[in-house]
Image 1 (tube, rainbow, N blue to C red):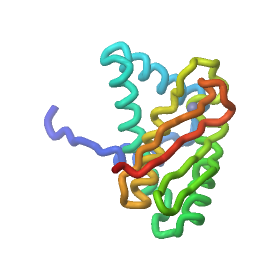
Image 2 (image 1 turned 90 degrees about the horizontal axis):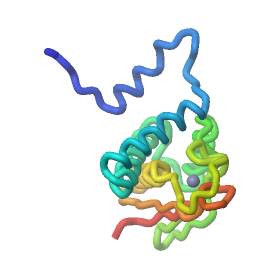
Image 3 (image 1 turned 90 degrees about the vertical axis):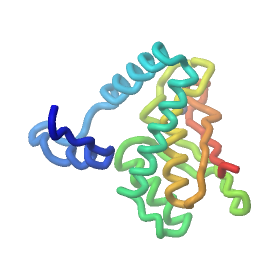
Image 4 (image 1 turned 30 degrees about the horizontal axis):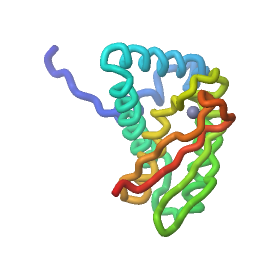
Length: 172
Ligand SMILES: [Zn+2]
């Protein structure tokens, strides 16, 4: 096709603001999970599990970066910034965020998300599944601090916990 334009994530996100006059802007969690877990299965079947996890993490990072730029005020000091983040995540019904620990010197952080959209209610799988969220949180923290963060999920519904717990560190 001629004149085909490559759209960025931000372009696609902008387009959803109108166009659903009757159905509106919200969808059930089931639709989100249908997309997420079908993609997970497909990527895992094609490229293997390790690559699938890496793709989810990277995509989450892009989303987190976008989210921070669009919906958060990075000029706020940390406590105000995190309360704004908590509010936004609840508004979007993504989950209920708590900052469990923060070490000012090292920048290390422990965050929990309860009622997480990705995994709440999942059966015990013996592994964490919220790799997209790992990237998402890392993207937000990176965007806010200007330092590259990694986040690793250490507890999850899928490991038998009632909250998802993430350790976030600045990349060396
Ligand atoms: Zn989880």
